[in-house]
Image 1 (cartoon, rainbow, N blue to C red):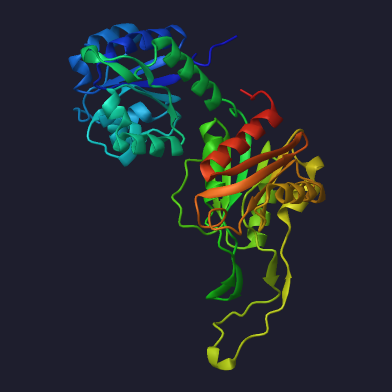
Image 2: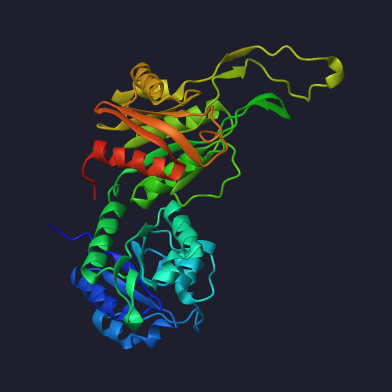
Length: 409
């Protein structure tokens, strides 16, 4: 069986901890498994290990300087096309730089540029590890989806002992291989994700919409792309930053979203309807601004297109084995009731999976970073509980991986 490392570009960032000497074996192990290992060393790291050691092991030059002569931009070239960024050992200083987006050397600039999975292996004295600032930085990085490996309890420098010791090189290689395996889970798959609310015009300046920020859909799109999928994002108006996906289609109305989805759905392995599409729209809308002096207008509504139901009814026109997933926004915090609603909607819409999430609580749904949700599929109900939207995105893409089976490479 081919190793996940074979043919992968791994950027190994070595920062200034005494455990840096152990990372020599990490570089050796990944290289022997077929990875193209590109080592970046901080100035402090070079006090513990010579750069030439890593050059000899990986057959690649070691990056040490942010600024070099010539047209290349080192941190961009290192990050571009990387399958994994591995930071070992990760000092308290390097964790702080990553958490706060500081980019004042080659390591931190590369980490900030990278769009691939990131694995971080902390190593420091116990007092530094337990400091609230470090713990806050670690929590921030975990929330962003960065994988932390260790530290563990054991002997430290200066004869001390405690939590903060770097895990062993074999454990780091194993963690890297696992991350690389996840990064390729959806390789060869095409995924369409919808996000955001739609806007149904009343006149040129007014519309019917909802409170959706689009964050849930954007995070799902990013997670699918992180695992190797070719992702198309069809999005209603949002203020979110553009995610790193292959195609972004911007729409406003439910009809525009329906057309964009149906035009592309036949080529997709997965369609995830995370957008908050309007249920109703005005039958007509004025071509000029309605004047307040004329009194309240009579707005007659009609049903907007039900994109999920149309997808569910057209499974035969989708790719064989294609997976259709929908979201159901409910004002129901009770997980048992959410589960019933999710399963009922899965049946009525003809979807493979329904994610029902509570949007009626202060800590769940629209305009917050957490969701209380259940995932209903043919194999049963998963109560995700109250989690961050990023964690829910990971759980949903995990489900997609299981439903699709082995990736197409």
